[in-house]
Image (cartoon, rainbow, N blue to C red; front, top):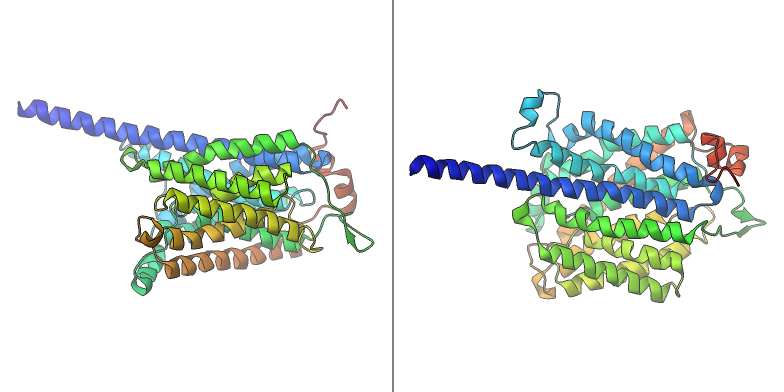
Length: 406
């Protein structure tokens, strides 16, 4: 009987490894599909003359990010790469390859986030160069600190506060990093031509509410892969993560509905604000804590978007600093509040640890953003010419309109 039992155990191990690989692959596909959401959210928000550019940027940035992360970024974050034989890559059903695919979709979200902030006036190739540098060096530097324990950062926080910095699915590592990098780019780019007239700020209306809504819905659905599949193994699947994501999404929607006074742009960004904020503590919150986190995030987004729209130098087209940067930072801090046992959470978190980790992430993003975009502005330039911006990025860069027959 022993050989049979041994064979059965080996078979079970193979099934478990295959199941984990398939589980993570489904997560990677869901997050990959979220990039379509980024694209259509931007398409619906920008003016008609910049819709093609929005679609092209998201896809080409993903391609460039894949190469940057495959050859450099993944090595920076996890001290491992893929310049080995294919037979070695296939150990454990190729789980390491699928893990790379999954984490790549997170890394590539950084350029997708930034794209929305710099829309309608940024040069194509210089911005792609900036994205490559960010995905190859800046993002994985912080990713490795938090999710791989690089440089002893997590151990230092734990020794200091009694708990490590907890960011289960990337409120700070992904969204905060993208939002605060975008802030640097937006400030260095300056406001779109025609936005300030005779000292007054003119608002540009979205080009398509249906496309904006479609993008928001795609992102919302894909987010459950973003959060739940962050467990990276079937045995780690948590219904708590799923329900917490749901409650934060609903909280963000309701808050944006009320504070945004039934504005469809705010309403469709509300669930995204809640989902950004819940990422960090989705595995430790009580559902009521997740709901509170989402409510605050939805209101924060609306208030900050309105405030930014009144600032001449802060022309953040999709409000990505408010949505990803500030709501991401709120999520990092909220994890240290609603994740504690006192608020019904599972505990094991510390507010001071969350504060240190959040401030560190914001600081790295801002410093790196001003350096990268500042150097590129002085060398290659960041902005389209005034004539190209007037014509629109679609004609200036891609030589075609979104609807050529019109």
